[in-house]
Amino acid sequence: MACFLLLKAVKHTEVLVSVHGKSVMEVCIFFLYAMILLPGIAASVHQVKSFLNHTAYLSCYFPNSQKTDIKDFIVFWQKGDEVVHEVYYGQEKHDNLSPKYINRTKMDMDKWTLQLLNAGIVDEGQYKCIIIQRRDKGSPKVIYTSECLLYIFANYSQPEIAWLHTGELKPSKYLNLSCSSSGGYPEPKQMTWLISHENRTLRLMRHMDVSQDAVTKLYSVTTKLNITVPTNTFTNISCLLHLGDQLGSLVSVPLGIEIPGEEMEQVKIDLFGPLTAVIVLITLSLVFVILKKKINSSPTNQSVSLAV
Image (tube, rainbow, N blue to C red; front, side, top):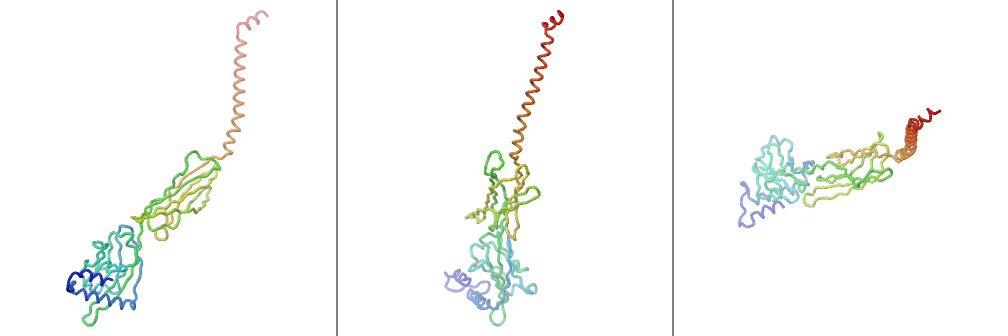
């Protein structure tokens, strides 16, 4: 395919033009040699991880490469049928690159590493590096191949817990919550609810709703919780988002809840009656004493006392 791309670039000409001193036909021959010889050459495969919109580093470093001169080699980077980058005898060439890689790649020739700028989710996949050595006699020889599996990561927002109902919490009533996170990649593994009270932690798994943005390809996730919580006990509720071995986990800010029990309400009711009765009796006693004092101190009572 790379050979076809090279030919396509000159399809409007009647002759094959030279490319850095080599004809397009010769470059095609190099690719044909690569396709023929690659099955017998052991290729090293390694994983490359990069965060979204950062630079990804795809290595094609091979043994004793520091003792070689890149000017003696042709280096091709490919992803499937797409040409990602080309270096001809120490000179980078951009004429035949796939459009989406134009102005996005450059070669660190000292480290034999391709830099893929502003790596996006669409850039995920397998990249192959082919190194062809020029020889004075005989055909050019493929001396090394390398494969990189590129994985892109994007950070999710911190999970956030939200109330799904309003009003005062009552004993034996269900508590409705949701937990959400967005803007991440790849798709997370799961979300877990952590319910902690009295030095114990309960883990609850609930269904996780996942949606992916059609343009950015980033994921948003939400899970819901519908439970009753212990009364008269302080309870912490958190949400844990599991992102896999690569990124670990994210946890929400804990939500603290304490619901008074029905028995406490009943105690208040039971105490209210006797307490009211005592207050009434004390009030009546005070009124009686005051009235009695007023009657004893009245002029009529004093006259009766003198007559006697």
